[in-house]
Length: 73
Image (cartoon, rainbow, N blue to C red; front, side, top):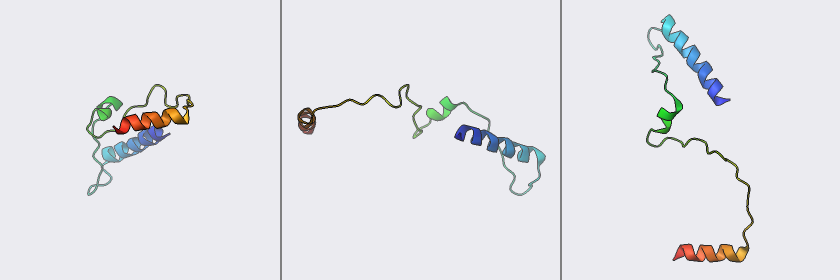
């Protein structure tokens, strides 16, 4: 949904830039880049995982406490 919104907004801004209707505060569009360019930038969000919602697993409380204790050491 947001990708579609961004494309629509870019199209409007590009039309405004080409029409030169706003001489003082006209938009200036940067070249379009693919998603990988933005993922490679420092501090960028990470791309989606292949499995965003893996199946949950049940862990016994005692095992959980043991792993927590081991991690504290």
